[in-house]
Picture 1 (cartoon, rainbow, N blue to C red):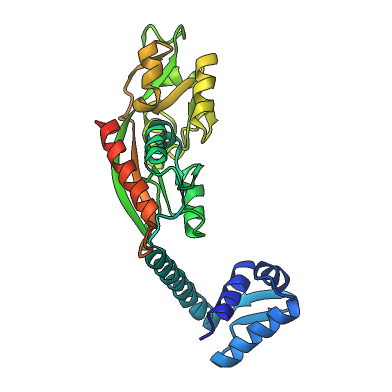
Picture 2 (cartoon, helix red, strand yellow; picture 1 turned 90 degrees about the horizontal axis):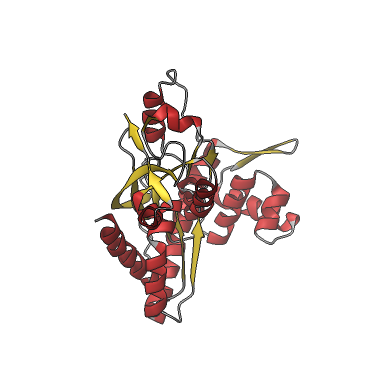
Length: 301
């Protein structure tokens, strides 16, 4: 079976448009159409319906597309493993990090990796778990480190726990709520700044605030860049939701003060390393994961 033509089938399945699919695989549209016709002829089944410009997989096409994705993924993994075995090199790597691991783990991790492997190129992308998962599925990154409680149940994913970081609400020194105990409703009135909040945490906050059933607790400011959230909290009366590890230096310096909130549900970030199952990591990715795991254990303690 021609793997190149199977790749053309997947391009058409993803775009549902002959011209866009042809552009994706760097073929002219007539050549691309001939490739699809050829594989349909070889298989003896019609893979796509073509009605007045509307392209959609047939039931037989859906059957082939699902198996073609796995076959091409395995082929890429085999080629990667052969290259790694042949070259016996560490290789460059790219991975993703969520906002809190970026703030609490990456300064130490990246400093250590640069000291140990100065000739290796690292590419690190910071975002929330949802966007990082898309990057992982398209194999643009080898793994990512992020909050994992909202990840979908997916047999294609391998999730290695990194433990938890305790969370807190904090405000700038001199904030009206800083010197007294308050309720969650009091804090919420000032506006809460947070990264993407896990669903279970949203539900707990909604109950604690006393919102009607089904109504979500929506932060006043949601941002994947923790440095921005921190800057806003230090310069306004906005309440910052964070892990304690992320704000420890500001707490120690007195720039931020932890809020004493009555009835606040337990807040924590549950982190993990997420990768594609059955995909052999590069040697450098394995070294990076080992370093991240060790640093996370030290920070969490």
